[in-house]
Length: 271
Image (cartoon, one colour):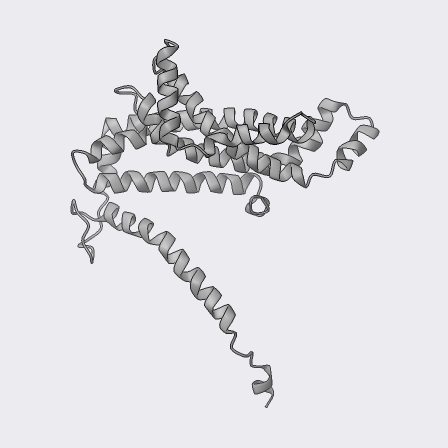
């Protein structure tokens, strides 16, 4: 009798919710699973069921200078973009949230506009601008282009933190004798760090995987990994492409794990 009373009634709504989430998760992860099978498959084509497990495509990826040079270039550019996006995006977010600037809504939309335009149009516009200015296509020009499309992510995540920021904490620190510089570095910056770091993670990933903008601004033998993979697929399609994709996915996961170690995923989820 007690067992029957304690038995929970079937909740059709919850079951439908869990089923829908499971299907959505499967839909999102299925491509990654297919890429992983392709990368570990010893044959140069996808076969189900797999005929075996091999690391030959990862070995080919890391032994091909064209791939490795592009990988290190993409990592270096993404690292530079990470630093620039955090500095520029954090400063812009603070100015928009604290500066009492006229036309704040317009300025916010202006800084977020790179997200509204197709990246291929942004790349074409920057390519023409560089040529008209006589700059050419230097690496620093590519870094600035990636920063342009990455800064909005830092601005948005930082503004989300500043929106719920309790300024009485800063006022209390100032009343206790802290200088404005000390208040910023010891009070404001630690509190907005989750938003800044979260935006920095987005900036790093967007820069590392950026293809449309890079396509217009790279030079021969100075191509980023997405452009090298695009050119490779025009002539060949084997497991090396899948291996490169898995390397990119693992790098993105590594960045997220670094974020978790620095500020914790709970702080990241609150955004």
